[in-house]
Image (cartoon, rainbow, N blue to C red; front, side, top):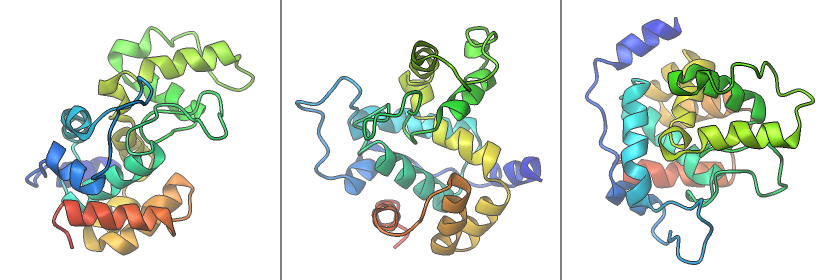
Length: 199
């Protein structure tokens, strides 16, 4: 069913993800004085747009929801790894847990050989967790992780819900992610909806 959902999405005209759109979501974002992990809207936009194309996510409701999650989890693209509380192995723009980062790395042809001998993150050393995270936090992969997770873990229910009603569908999507959609997440969704012209 997930493959069918992907095929259906491919028929739509993809939404443009520009620096201007992302800036509307996070108008005060700057990387001045921040760590090297930080990316501006202008730096992030091309990678996010390519990731949506790669995973064939063309519906604007879906894109807005995914981008809102990325923006919140990464502190407006400031962080690539979990800082609070500092959980080893957790990272990328959507702050995936280590087990998903390993699975994500194994899904990328250029990275498969580099993680071929790692079968699980259970009882993995900090060095191994850091190594896996270093592979998937290169910009072109860092900004693709949320789209990967969405298409591999959350279809078809989240897609059906978001395309029908973005607010109700967002609750379904956040349930898939394993978090509460209320509070800041709803605020970020509303910002994304405004930025993408959905409200």
